[in-house]
Image 1 (cartoon, one colour):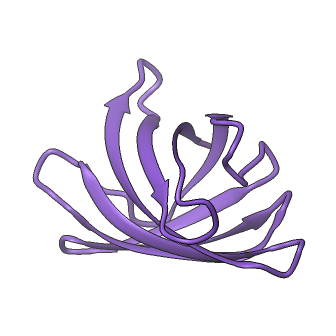
Image 2 (cartoon, rainbow, N blue to C red; image 1 turned 120 degrees about the horizontal axis):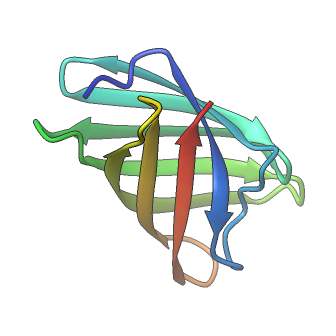
Length: 111
C-alpha cells in the first residue's frame, strides 16, 4: 500500500478529537517513512510523521496548532482498509500526549 501524494479527510472522530470534515491531510511516503501536512476546521496547521509496515499499518506521531492557539501532540496507530472503489479508509486509534491525555478513534477516507 502506497500513501504517497494521497489526500484524506475524516468521516468520523471521537468527541475529544480536533479534526472535522474540513480537515484535509496530504500524505507523502518514501520507503517506509510517511509524513503528512494537514489543516482545516479547528486545526490551523498540523504535521505527522510515521512508519508504514508491509501491510500498510502506520505507527505515527503528530503535532498541531488549533484555533485556540494551543500546541497539541499525540500518537496514533492506523489500520488501512481498501474500499471497493480502490480508495483507502484508515481506521485510527489515537492518544493525546498533551492536554487531558485522553484517547479516541477516527476514520479517514481518501478523497
